[in-house]
Length: 139
Length: 86
Image (cartoon, rainbow over the protein chains, first blue to last red):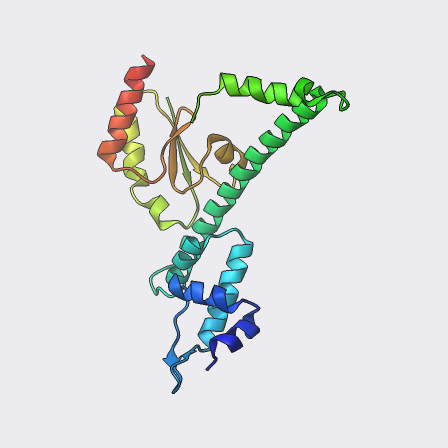
C-alpha cells in the first residue's frame, strides 16, 4: 500500500493532481492508515499510468473515466474501445483541419503586409482584421 | 438523395438498426443512394463532412444524425429533406 506521496513519486504526478483524480472518481484509496492517511494499491498505479497515456493520445479526463469504466466491464469488447479511439482521431483530424485553415488565413495576412516599417495605423493586417469584423456577425 | 452511414467495424452501436434504416431509406425515397462507409477507409471524407462521433449519418453531404436515430426519426428527416429539395 502507498501513501499519496509515495504514489506521486511512483507515477511522476503531483499530490494535487492525484487529489483531483480522486475528486473526479478516477482513482479511489483502498484503505486508510492508522493515522487516517489515504492508502492506495498497485491498481491505482496502473490506473494513473493508463490516465497519463490516454491524455497523451488526446483523451479528456471525462473520456478517460469512460474508458476506465469500459476496461472494468465484463460485457465490453475491444470494438467499443476502438470506436472511441477512432472518434478521438476524427476529432483531432477536424482540429488539424481547422488549424490549417487558420494558418492559411494568417499566411494571406502576412503576405499582404509587405512593408513592416509602416506606422501601425496603416498596418494592412489590422485593416484586414477590421474588415473581417465588419463582415462577420457579432457572436 | 445520398445517404451515408459512417461506421466503425466492431462497433456494436453501429450495427444496431443498420439494416432497418437501410430498408426505411429505400422505402421512403425512391432514388436514394445508400452508402455504408467504414470510416477508416474514408477518413478524409468523414473529416470533410465533420463526422466526429460514430455511427453518424449524413444526408446529401450534411451530418444530420450523430448517433443512430429510430426508424421513425430517420424516415421523418428523409421525407422532410426530400420535400425541401423539390
